[in-house]
Length: 197
Ligand SMILES: C[S@@+](CC[C@H](N)C(=O)[O-])C[C@H]1O[C@@H](n2cnc3c(N)ncnc32)[C@H](O)[C@@H]1O
Image (cartoon, rainbow, N blue to C red; front, side, top):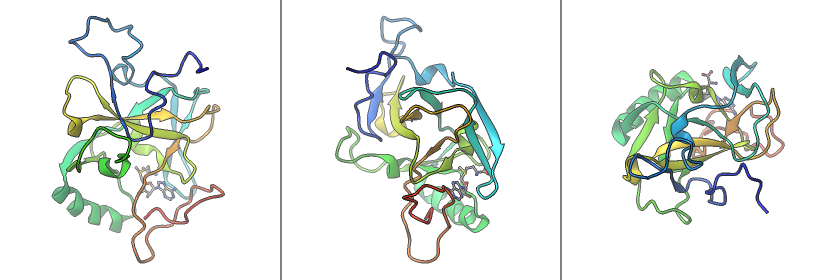
């Protein structure tokens, strides 16, 4: 039996498309299928870490399945993202979110590649400070609200487990591990892959 507070799409695999009610629905704003569109509803804190720069932690307990925040920023095409990505990698800090890397090709309705990357370097919200972990406590879903264009889905981050107040929030960046030295991962988990990319 599922707990009452789990959204109806909770059984979907990470990276899948989910639909929220929108202005074409007869329901009102109190509908339980209007989650991401209400914005951040949980208390979050940005804090400084020793090895990972800024990070985000829960300022109150967050139950499994709760929407945490949306990853927002400038929407770039692949060419622009590659160009900026090289610069960011050289600088050692990147706020690019590669939508494609998070799509579960087997379990999703999205077909083909999403030719966009979200860049939160200059425009973003608290999600830009969330670090990577090889044992994450957040998962990502692609969420459709007003537009039904799968390639323009919102990116929602949700608690994948019960999270205690004070615990750092993290999701799996799912970067490709490229040949070379890459960038060391400091997530500290027992199954850490050792590198971010
Ligand atoms: C989206 S930003 C996260 C916020 C960032 N820590 C800051 O200070 O603004 C991503 C960057 O944070 C750092 N980072 C995130 N997770 C990390 C990890 N597990 N180990 C080392 N650095 C990490 C890397 O520099 C990465 O490019």
